[in-house]
Length: 129
Image: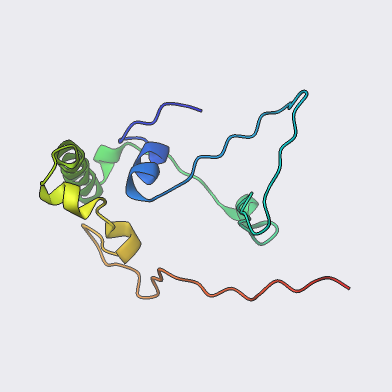
């Protein structure tokens, strides 16, 4: 796995939520991997076929959009401060544990999406016939 730094995406996500890191070896020689009943063993994230191919990625320097640049720098500073204070027992950050802004749909600039959701109720799996 690559580095986990607060300024990269994986480091940011892992710092924000209670993620489990699961590592499956490519080859398991002389051993068995056993999953207990009802134990989660994967995450399925379905996407409509062709969706990824429809994305038109674009790269540009952060500085080309002053509003976004300013918001990012403010966020990065707040994360550094929060992560430093997180290590201090009794600090507000230590009591808070994680900031949850994106989870709550809060944004530091622009408008939060009106349809932001924190929970999705999926249908129960049916046994195939």
